[in-house]
Structures are given as structure tokens and as C-alpha cells.
Image (cartoon, rainbow over all chains, first blue to last red; front, side):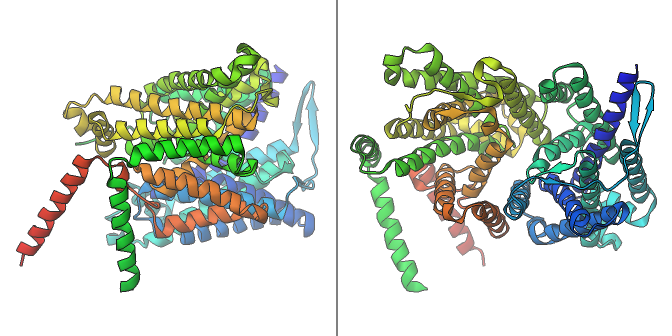
Length: 291
Length: 347
């Protein structure tokens, strides 16, 4: 029983990181209908910012988190302005290939600057409480609570502020919204800033939970987070959160009861079955093709 | 620049005259094959250059076959490396464990063919979800398939698991690569310009409308996926016997990304574009090798710049006259003439 509870806690931890990254994918998709494949690598850059700030500047946890988020958000906006904006009217696939190119660029640039895996110094005092056989570390609690708080803030922004209303409006109808006096460019930049900022936060938390980071870590985590976004129904913010926790849960539970090498196999097979049964994700709405 | 453009047009007309000659293709085949055989037997090209040419050939096969799905059919498949892995493993298992050691050179084409067939069977399975899902969701299906293949291969100890498989002899020679490359380009070119190929194009333009025009979309999708994955499997078999070592990590998402980049660099829905893209990408990576890791920084940067200034890629939806049937050329000419007349007639 305690073992299962322990695994549930692990699943929540991994799931909240996946959910944070998946949010970035789904927000950008909702507003631009473009898959930002560089997002996983922005997550990696977030972890490296965390390493730089913690190792060289010896900052404590809160400033590290905030500065990393800010740095990644800034990078995200720059990428959007330089690479994606000229392609807004180009075929969709060109934008996707550009995103793949930006991702490769970030990976290899980081690799060229730091060829060896880095170890993030412990930012927080990690205390472990044990109840019988169950042990809860404060780190896990912080990761879960912090990401839940971030998701709640995001949900508030999207549902209850003017900027959030503009975001929802743009994803609803892109041609009418500028006529209503909404500056589409600003809203798109804001979306990128929030989405990539959340990815940066996920990078910091990932670095806390699994402290060895390398430039290629964003690929696998990024693609998995993309899968979370699709499972939840891409473009749907609450769907991305649910998808993140589902994939995190499945991965941890498979690892807990089977040999851990089967983890990817089972996770992706489940994904395939889900997509065949429900091709538009859990919370997504089917888009009937019209003639 | 009138002078340059005049020279360019002279060259272009000469090139068209050359390629329009009915002996062009037979002469090209024989000369190419003879060159490849001479290069591999007398070794007047050193082994490094030969290896680069082999990689160019393999990449052309991969790019042209992926272009069938991504360019002509308009889907977004990101799992091409998975098909390649299936072909590579089947072919290598055959040559390492099944075939007698003496007859490997003779049986090598069979091994490659078996690899392609295996990959085609898997491609058939992947085609089934494509009936219902399209676009980004189909991309996820192919992505998940690629990861499942990698994960399965890592879990089977008989094929070496994560350590990989070795013991293949260097059976991939330049003439064989030339043969398979020409075969794949020939098959896919003829497929695309056939009646069936029009069905593939119509799915890209509008699936429902093509269904209404009595195109059997399911059949078209299955055949396109099967043909594409067949050639990816063949490329995998050739790749395994050129490198003499494979492991599951070679066929991960980065390999798929590489193929995607070659397709979109050359331009979608263009045979000539695919060949150009594969050749340029492979050779550029080799030329930039002295830069070390920085070439991997430079390449994506160039890709992004190319996409910004030329989003359709180098050839983008156009094909060289070389690959077009005469019927199409005549129709195009008539259509241009008509358009010009209409433009002249309008005030």
C-alpha cells in the first residue's frame, strides 16, 4: 500500500513537469496552429540557466526559478520574432521545419558550449519524512505544489483577464480579432512568453528532481510532453494538464510493476490505442471536415 | 544582368536538349553503373569518397520515399527512421545468422529485399490509423510507432538489445547503392505520375472531394505507406551493411528529423527536389566536418534562414523537366499559352 502511494507521489512529480511543458505546446498551438518543436529544447535551456545561476552566482531557489523563467521567456519571444513571425503566412509545414531547426540549433549550441553533462548543485534543503515504509521528500512536495500553483495562475490568466480573453479569441477566429482592436502580435508574443516561461520553470524543477542535465535531455522529454498535449486534445489548456498527469502516471506505474525498459513501449502503445479510439484527444473537440 | 541570364538560358536549352534526347536515360544508367563498378573495383576514388557517395545514395532513397507521404500525399510522417530500423535489423539478421558465409555477396540483394518487405508490412500497419486520423494526430501516430520500434529493439536480447548488432560484412558497394537508388527513384516517379499518383495528389488537396470523385482513399493511403516504408527498409538494409554496426539509438527521432530536413530543404512534391536536398545536405555536412561540433550549429541555422527566405524549399512543388512525362510538359505548354492569350486579350 505504501509502495503504491509512493509511486503515486512519483507519478505526480513527473506528471506535473510533463504538464508544465505540455502547456507551452498547447498554448502556442491554440493561438498559431503551429507545433513549436523547439519547446523541449527551451525546457533544456531552462535547466541550463538554473545550473548557471545556481553554480556560478550561488543564487537561492526563488531568484533562480524566477530568473530562469524570465530568461527562457525572453529567449522564446526572440525566437518567435526572428524565426516564426516571417513564416506566419507560409505553408504550415515550413513553420514546423523551422521549429525543428531552431530546436537542433539550441541543442547543438548548448552542446558546443558545454560538452559534458552538468550537475546542478542542491538548491533546497531536502528533508525526508518517513511514515512507516512511506518516505516523502520535501523536494517532491515543492515540485508538485509549485507546478500546481503555476497552472492555477495560468488558468486564471487565460480565463479571467483581458489578455487571456484575447488569447482565447485569437484561437477562436484569427481574422476577426484584429478588427476588434486587439494587437495580435503582442498577444502572440505574450503567449510565447508565458508558454516558454512555464517550460523554463519545468526545466528548473526537472533539474531539482533529477540533477544531472545534458544538452540532449530536451528531446525525449519534449516529445513526450507533446504527446501529453495531444492526448489531452491539442490547443486545450486543461487537456494538456490532464495529459501530463496521465503520461506521468502511466510511465511511473509501468516502471513500478514491470522492468523499466518496457516503460516507453507500454506508454506509446497506450497512446496509440487512445488515439485510435479517440483521435482528437480527451478534451479536444472533433473537427468535422467540411466540403 | 542581361549577360548572365543569356548564358543561363543557353545552358538551360542545351541541358533540355541533352535530357530530352531519347538515349539520355539508358546512357545515364550504363555510364553510372560502369562508373560505380569501376570506382569500387579499381578504387580510383578513395574509400572515404566512396562511403560519402554511398551515404548520398541511401539518403536519396530515404528522402524520395518520405516525399511520397509528406510531399505528395500531404501527411506529416515523422517516423521514417522506424521503418529504416526494421529494414536494417531484418537484413542484418539474415546476413549474420541465416545466410551461409560463402554466399553472402550473392544473397545480399535478397537480404535487402527481405528488409524492405518487412518494413512494408509494418508500414501497412501504420497506414491503418491514417484512415481516421489526419494532420498532427497522424504525426503522433508515426512518432509513437518510431519510438515503439526503438523500444522493442532495445528489449529483445537476441538482436543485441541496446548494445546493438554487429558482425555484418561490408556488403553495401557503390554499384548496389546506385541500383537501389535508381530503382526507388524510378518506382516512385512512375507511381506519382501514374493514374494512381493523381489519387495521392488529390488526397493532399482535399480528401473528401477526392473520395467523392471515386478515389479509393483507403487503398491509396495503404499503397503509399507500403511503398514508402518498403524503400525506407531497403535504405536501412543498405545503411546497416555500409556501417557494419547498428544499434537502436541510431534510428531515433533525430534520424527522422534528418530525413525530414532533407525533404523540406529540397522541397516537397518534387523528385528532383528530394535528390537535390539529399545531395546538398549530405555533402555539406561532410564539407563542414573540419568545423567540428559547430557544423551542427551552423546547419540548423542555415535551415532556418532557408525556410524564412524560401519557405517552399529549393524546388518546392516544381519538378525538373527530366522527371516529367512528355504529356504533362505539353499540357503545361498549352496551358501557359492559353493564359498568355487571355492576358493579352484583356485590356
